[in-house]
Length: 98
Image (cartoon, rainbow, N blue to C red; front, side):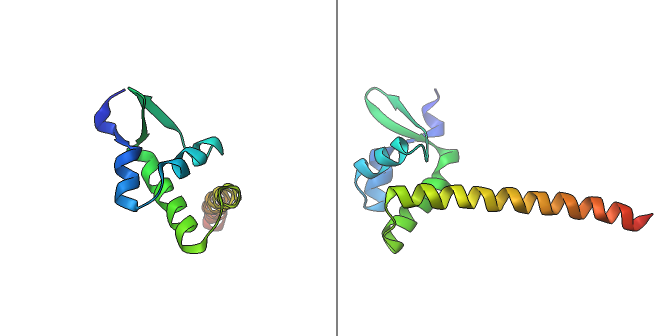
């Protein structure tokens, strides 16, 4: 595990003014994956946008972790449907060219 690709949860929480326990709860709900290095929880940089989104939803809209799990699942479904629509439009364009 390269530490350059990870940020400590402690640093993240201090910057975003949240409790570390909140991030640990997000891991319990399988909303993100944490790595532990020398007893310190770390999050991969690729997971930061999702973590920041969950923090904003929690702070601004007061959504609890269970609600965040539902919101995340719905957002994933919307993203998949958008990809499917894009693919179908591309296929339709091929038929229009014939």
